[in-house]
Length: 247
Length: 247
DNA sequence: AGTTCCTTTTGATCTGGGTCAAGGCTCTGC
DNA sequence: GCAGAGCCTTGACCCAGATCAAAAGGAACT
Image 1 (cartoon, rainbow over the protein chains, first blue to last red):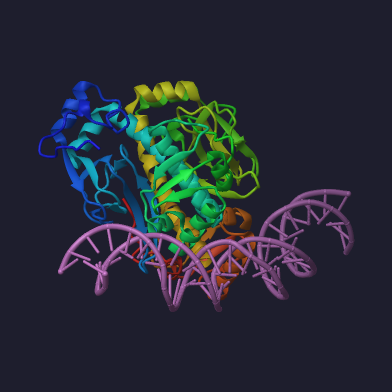
Image 2 (cartoon, each protein chain N blue to C red):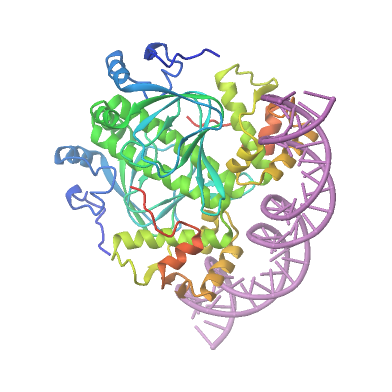
């Protein structure tokens, strides 16, 4: 994995998320102005990026690594409400305090923008607002798909759904082998999976074991998964088998 | 309730949702252009506005009444993923087919825009894109709050949460009596409530009865609810009692 | 005032997933 | 090579909510 030098600002032109992040539509002129207000921050696995309720003086994009967005009730029950992958946007323009806890689950690099200048720039740069709208609409769709998972699926279907989502994402980035087996690294602990799916970690463990026993998946170590037949997994997830992807 | 004449286009200036809908930021010049591409449609309670997968040639705003956004699995399990109130936006610019079923739960009037002209106008009118971004971010927050409800709350907490949301909305529109009792009409059947909360309608009925028995709420008829002490209801919902509203 | 169609309530029973508890792996550090 | 700390798995038991079934409103007809 290519290291990113945090001491000097990388040129946006070379950025790995240049064409998928909030800056995707910007022209070189606009990028230059963004470079003036951006800075990189590195977080280690397990580190908290922001606590819910904290004052937030930046927004930004995940450049590499993975973070989670979680909500916690007073008595400690927690629910993950977002999974942030490279190019995903963190923070909400126009909001003072963070609404959720953001935690890095792997080592992570963020490209941060100071909030005030970013907001001001957003007012004057339709390209940024347009792209952010697109990304937010996508996130809303993802959240709604997730609501179906949380509200109506069984534990086994929930696990299968989560694995499909991760497998699909990896397939998009890497080879698009439609027929063959798919292998990927699981970036979440059993507990994080439980928080994602509204289950307990014991149930997650049991259902992963069950899917393995039934030959739907196989694991090397705890965190590396192979899906011999993607269609079978989608079947278990209770999704339309035709894999209909929304635009 | 004031009737809306569908035969002639109402002037946007007189529109009840003028300042909360997607057109909220438009100036009179922009409104004029919107009036050229808009038309009203009326739906009766129970009528389907769009089926998931159908080609959608319009987007629009709910003017009056209530609609639901639902997702259905092949075997018939359904989950509500959105509750559309007056001023809420329906449809996604840039998308061909509807992603969800939209059903009117009460008589409803929509202000529709033909999709192609609307999309084109959005490109050239930052005021519309900006407002739509704001509204989408709000919806995303609502979806995430809902995910916590679906994933981690008990049946009783779910019911209390739903009632709080509806009560809060009504309080915002009508009197803002912070201390006193709150009364409102429940616009959903028990089944719709169940679809919202990921429960069965029997469980909904039982929990409503339980909350009534415990004096948290009282009902006149099936669909009219009084909350003597809003704090007590919020307590039951498992929310922070300080009623912290996000910006 | 009775018939039909819906919605809602209530009861009885069942079960998926939660809870509590005990070990098992794997890596790190001594 | 073993002690400790994190994760993860597995087992035994229990309960909240689902399921199945019946009956009770209530509104709109005749």
